[in-house]
Length: 103
Image (cartoon, rainbow, N blue to C red; front, side):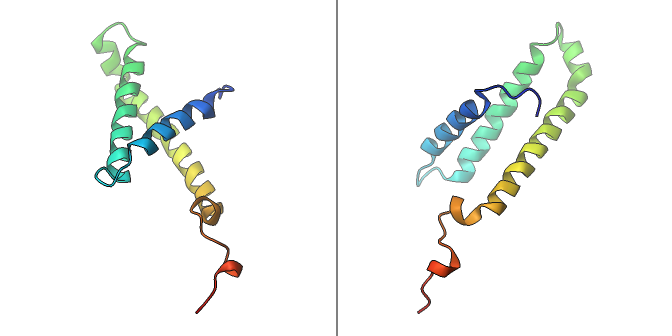
């Protein structure tokens, strides 16, 4: 990731909190995740468009821009997956094996 400022994780946490608030019995995690993915793709398309003067310029930059976003997303997703793998029991509230009582 490039140039992470002091508020980077705070902003990310606010988006996560909003998504968590949207999860209900009727609207599960998968639907909220899909909405969030759509929202970020829409926002990133807009951010990209603001850097150009014409639709043609934007079209010429499309593949390179999409590749940039996909590469960055993959790095972030891999980092977060690794974090969850390393901290699974803590994050998913599973007690250590020593605390599990076998019947």
